[in-house]
Amino acid sequence: MKKHLLITGGAGFIGANFISHLLESNKYKITNIDSLSYASNYENIRHFENSPGYRFIKCDISNVEDLKNVFDLEYDALINFAAESHVDRSIKDATPFIKTNIIGTFNLLQAVLAGKVKKLIQISTDEVYGSLHPTDLPFTENTPLAPNNPYSASKASADLLVRSYFKTHKLPLIITRCSNNYGPLQNTEKFIPKIITNAMNNIDIPLYGDGLNIRDWIYVKDHCRAIQLVLEKGIPGEIYNIGGSEEKTNWEVILMILKKLGKDKKLIQRVKDRKGHDRKYAMDSTKIATELGWKPIFSFSEGIQKTIEWYKQKEHE
Ligand code: NAD
Image (cartoon, rainbow, N blue to C red; front, side, top):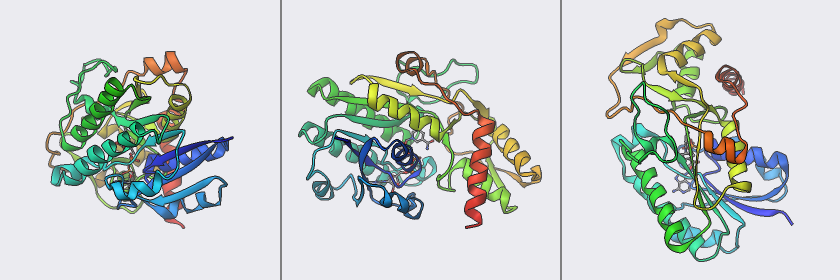
C-alpha cells in the first residue's frame, strides 16, 4: 500500500514543487493542506487534482478546529512547509509569523504526540543561524542559532520546539535547514522572481544597500530531492543542512539575470538597506552528502535559465 503523506503549505513555492516532484514518482498518497494565504497560487497547482491519491484541504495550521478535519486519518509522515516566509513582511508586522510558524508548528507536534503521524520533517532555513562575516566558513548543523529578524526568530523557535518534542517525548522528528531557493512557482515579491519579472517588463530593479550581501542559492528541485531523501532515509532527532554551494552577491545575481535577458544595468536602482540585513549565509552540506548521498545537480547558471524560461512562459499564458 502507498504511504500517505500530509504536506502543509503545498500551495506555496517549495511545497508545490515538492508535491510535483513526488507525483512524478507515483509512490505516495498525498494530502495537501494550505490556508491559501496571499503567498499561495492555487491555479498553479489545480492540475494536481487529476492525480490519483491526491487531495487538497483548505486549513490553517494555527487553527486547531481546522486541523481536526485533517486528522480524521493517520498519516505515515508529515512534511511541514507551511510558513509566513517573507523577511520584509516580518519586519513590518511579526504577528502572522508567530501564529503560523510557532503556534502552527506546535499544533502539528501535538498531532504527532497524539499518534496521528508516524514521522515529521520540519522544513527550516539557514536564516536561523544568523549572519556570517564574508570570510567565515559556512554554517554546519552545530552552528549556534542566532536569528536576526522576526521571520528567522520564528523559524528558530519552531526548530527548538521540534527539538524539545524529540528530546522529551522521543518522537520521530527531523529538521532540514536549506539555503535560499529559486525556481518555478515562487511569489514575485521574492528577490529572484522580482528581478526576472521587473527586467522582462523594463521596470526598475531595487537593490538593497551596497548589494554585497551573499546568499547560497539552490535550485528548488535539488532541495526537493534532498527532502525526499531525508523523508526516506533520515534519522529521527537529526538536523540536515542543505545548500546549493553557489554563493553569490546580490549584484552578481542581478547582473547574471540581466545578461541572460539582454537587459540594461540602468534598471538597477539602489534603495535603502533592509533593517538588520544579514550579510552572508552559506551552508556546509557535508552531513547530508556523506550520510544520505545527496548533492545538488543544477548549477546556478542552469537553474536560473530554467527559472527565466518558466516566468517568460507564465507571462504569455
Ligand atoms: P511560501 O510563502 O511560498 O509558501 C508558504 C505556503 O504556506 C503558502 O502556500 C501559504 O498559503 C501557506 N501558509 C501560510 N500560513 C499558513 C497557515 N497558517 N496554515 C496553512 N498554510 C499556511 O514559502 P516557501 O518559500 O515555499 O517556503 C516553504 C518553507 O520552506 C517555509 O517553511 C520556509 O521557511 C522554508 N524555507 C524557504 C526557503 C526559500 O528560499 N524560499 C529557504 C529555506 C527554507
